[in-house]
Image 1 (cartoon, rainbow, N blue to C red):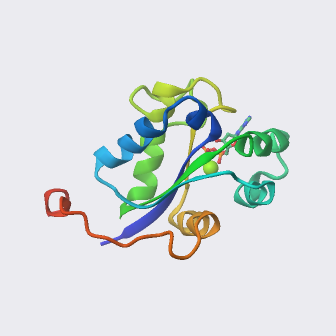
Image 2 (cartoon, rainbow, N blue to C red; image 1 turned 180 degrees about the horizontal axis):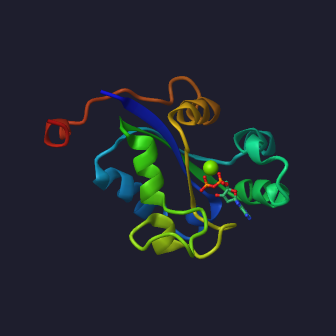
Image 3 (cartoon, rainbow, N blue to C red; image 1 turned 60 degrees about the horizontal axis):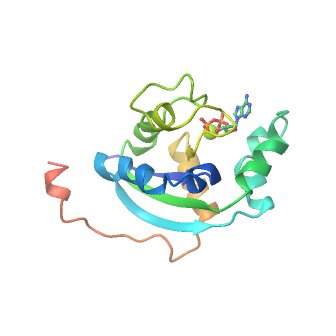
Length: 151
Ligand code: DAT
Ligand code: MG
């Protein structure tokens, strides 16, 4: 079927607040497959490339400041429908509007400190994984639980 890849990132506030395990758990428990994972200090140029569509926004300089302010945890997750599903697990951009049960709804209060990123389309999932990971950092493997998740 339609297997997709999404780029998920714990932002510097999530790392500083000790939420890395909690956030990884949400995707792990859901049943998606982890194919890439690293702690990483993001250079300014990469942050600007990642968020290039927002370059004209007034909050862009603060956004780049925030994303480069400390280490992030970069992840690649794979699965059928993973892009849209991960966005649902993450919740609305503004954590005050995010539903309880979502990561932002449960763990954050401000748009400028919304703890996690998730790709907004399969195309951007592929683009962002290529941007944040080097060749060899994405691993293809078969989880033994797969028959218990996918019939
Ligand atoms: P999302 O992260 O939910 O995909 P987005 O792609 O529209 O949201 O924006 C990327 C990030 O930019 C977002 O997580 C936080 C920041 N941001 C967006 N809108 C903002 C705003 N109005 N004020 C401050 N920061 C904002
Ligand atoms: Mg976005």
